[in-house]
Image 1: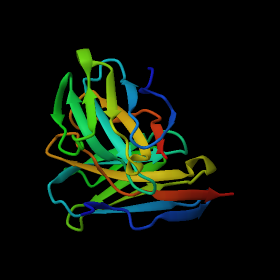
Image 2: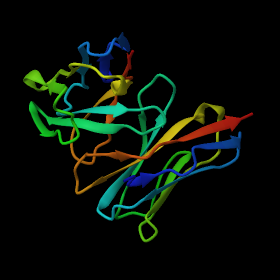
Image 3: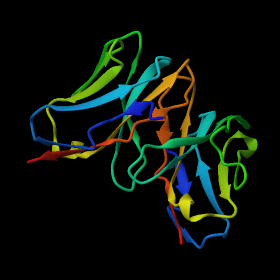
Amino acid sequence: DQQVKQNSPSLSVQEGRISILNCDYTNSMFDYFLWYKKYPAEGPTFLISISSIKDKNEDGRFTVFLNKSAKHLSLHIVPSQPGDSAVYFCAASAGGGNKLTFGTGTQLKVEL
Amino acid sequence: EAGVVQSPRYKIIEKKQPVAFWCNPISGHNTLYWYRQNLGQGPELLIRYENEEAVDDSQLPKDRFSAERLKGVDSTLKIQPAELGDSAVYLCASSWGNNSPLHFGNGTRLTVT
């Protein structure tokens, strides 16, 4: 049972344009959501998070949107840069604990 | 700040052999995690420690996997005996508290032949 789903295995975007990565979840107990970025042969790196009491969180070029009624979150990267090319994982946890459930990841490629 | 350190980076063993992975978390992080990542999948939690105590090991295959975190700092994860299906990347992570981001090491890529 995949509680966190990233239905797009890959995404290709031109440099300077917006990248939108999507994530859906099924567990209504999830109340904390994170995005991680992973380069080859490295561990995932924390990017941005959002609590369920918010619907938007921004950090520089990265914005995460949360739609609780739709059980959907998205990561926007504006403008996209070639260095953003990586695998992006969505993750979620419930009840203040840190037991993260990860999605399967989306490979983002930012082309020149 | 030094990151989470894992060793070895790569390990190739034959099935039925034992293997061990080591992790040194970020200084001051009381919570330590071991995750396993299979090819094309997201990381899956194996075990979580709060200091020396394993507070969540429900996903750890206890017939062949064991872990310890002596003195609440470094941790080792052991597989004995290894099976072909254990081939994966084993990730260690640490955090300082609830709802704080996990910081991952670079992982150990295990290949069982």
